[in-house]
Image (cartoon, rainbow, N blue to C red; front, side, top):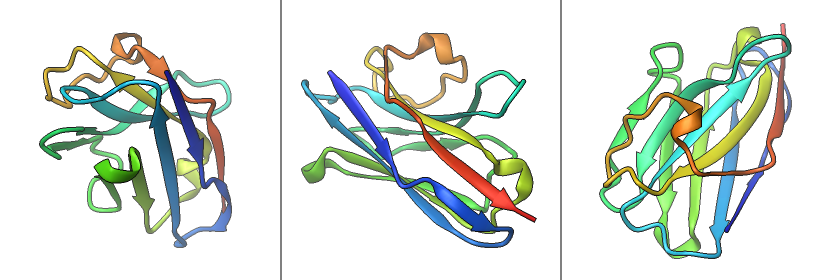
Amino acid sequence: VQLQASGGGLVQAGGSLRLSCTASGRTFSGSAIGWFRQAPGKEREFVAAISWSSGMTNYADSVKGRFTISRDNAKNTVYLQMNSLKSEDTAVYYCAADVESLGFPYKYDPYKYDYWGQGTQVTVSS
């Protein structure tokens, strides 16, 4: 199983980026795909998650109204559209798969996720 995250970069505050997470190696029906982020010196934190089958979504309070998670099942890809970016959004962003989610994207603990991508750096300059 592989998860490939991409799309990070340097953007000014108020700008936008779209991250992609492409999955391969198994079917993710019944799974949830989550995005997490980790800033230097901080713990990895939940950002958003989506049910692979139903499209049900869940967001951290800090990104609600600014970030949108979506999926394209035909491309085996999950996206994280990030708008109105703030300096505090600067972090390495990781995508992860929870294959025991039963289709519910409500796990916030990164240790509950089974597979991880390699991370992509997002830097927001103020």
